[in-house]
Amino acid sequence: MNIDARHMKKGFLSLMVMFLFPVLSEANVTTRKNWDVATLNTAAKVEYLTDNEKAVVLEINKLRSDPVAYTVEYLEPMLKMYKGTMLYMPGNVPIITREGIVALKDAIKELKSSKPAAPLFPDHRLTHSARDHQKDQSKSGKTGHKGSDGSSIDKRIERYGDWNKKISENIFYGDPDARSVVLHLVIDDGVPSRGHRKNFLDPDLRLVGVACGPHKVYRHVCVMNFAAGFLK
Image: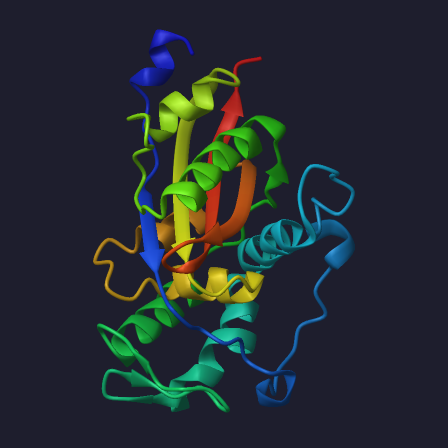
């Protein structure tokens, strides 16, 4: 990485832990968008990603392509599922949240005023860096952005290439379902900066690497690395 890139903005690093977050069933969705899956499913033919990791990329791209439609289809139906700080999803045990419906309403408000962003494209370098961290935490059962070897996101990415302008990282622990991963990070309950949401919607970020796997404590971990680009 050249020295100029080091002085340019590094994206928000954040993680989220959640034991359970069942997705909305199709029966609960009253308004659906005809998503352009052919365009948004940029990871469809990528061989180094699992089906679930490809689904995460698709879900992020749906959000980026039309934040308003994503809100109407997936977030607004949840408004009736809160009672205080408890979230009652049909057919599942209640979930204790930190902010209750406040975080959801904040997400809805922001997404309804957000402009569409270009879809993210999978990148093998970012996937390698995300995979390194995912495997490390699958083995250790730890959480956070610091690796067992003391590495940070920039060091892990720099093992595989020289990033340009901006990088960021989201980490989710809990339900492995792709939509669950994205919904949780978009709502960003208990995260004052809403950094996960900002990373997903950031128009400067164009590349993504995803690595999901088992976790000793939280059952599942999903690491997402983002970059504006690479120098070569």
